[in-house]
Length: 469
Image 1 (tube, rainbow, N blue to C red):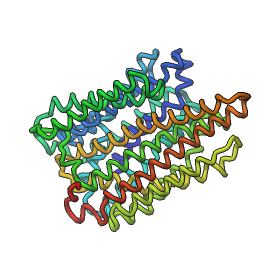
Image 2: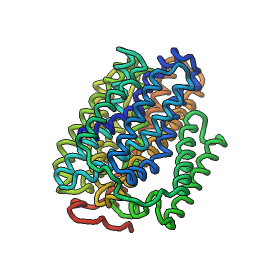
Image 3: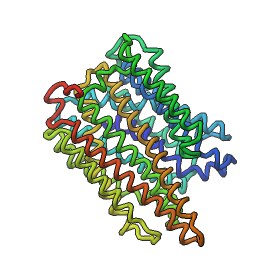
Image 4: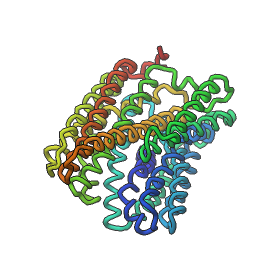
């Protein structure tokens, strides 16, 4: 459990740990502000587009082999990035990180899925995994701030060598599954369709953040990616060796879990982005202080996942927990709409972080568990890849939508005459507030969807999940 949790944490950290280090890296490597986004985008594009392939390879190779390759490759790419002496070298390293992360993340979750079968043990394991899944982005901001301020931005990448070394030893000692459960061939056409489709979809969302939704490259990429994914689904129904067997997604509880993770990720990743802007640009926090400001949500997620999900999931199943978590998360978002220019962290930021964290702990752990429950061992990698894909697509989509809303509302507010520093700050916070209301709406939709689709009772104990209706 510790080994798999460490592998998952390493992948999640690298989605955000580099963000706080970017200004220092920019000064050191002398690249433009316009190119800063590619340090983040390169990782997201390769990671998001190759997840389904990575999940399938973990089924074909076996969990242990996939973890070995993923950890070693991720560590080498991190070393390359830490030693980067040019912008091109750093972007290349981040892209390679994403490639091996796409193999590592599904393999870790698949190994967890096939290792823990007894309901109470499984609930505890997924409570730990869910706590990491929900708080990984916040931990990344905290660690990134600390490493950047106390050491160097390069250690935001070098730190992965430590994580990978410990995890590799742990895999050798504890993780079973040296051989793949599935000896069928790889679906080449499905791999091309899925990877290209996900690439263009993720690229479109990222491009929308830096340009606009009306830009031809944004909607053109989104349209092309959607068409490729539709063709991919059509092909999977006919392929003898599908990359993503449709039986993985065509049951009620797993479908509900994937949608819950998608909608949750849409809000969570964008919230970390907006709150980081608020703390650093509006309240003037240092990177380290901003990172520590997110510590309460990490604690709240851990407590919620450990004391509620671990004890209740094996008894109640996901249906009572996930919708309740969605409602709590929605309430946390509503609290964030009350942000002001005044430096009142305890009164305006802390309550939202705590309530949101308690809600996320009830969402992530049960959703991870039910998304992979009752899945055949040969499909564990594919189901795990879908979990990570839902999170990646949700994070990219939510960041694009909520960032666009915040910028658009702020710009419109600034169009009024008589603008000065105070009104610029007020307009920015107003933009954040509207975006938080939208995020609350996403959680509201998630509460409804999860209540309608998820089932009560333990899905592992009760056997195969019900088909979708």
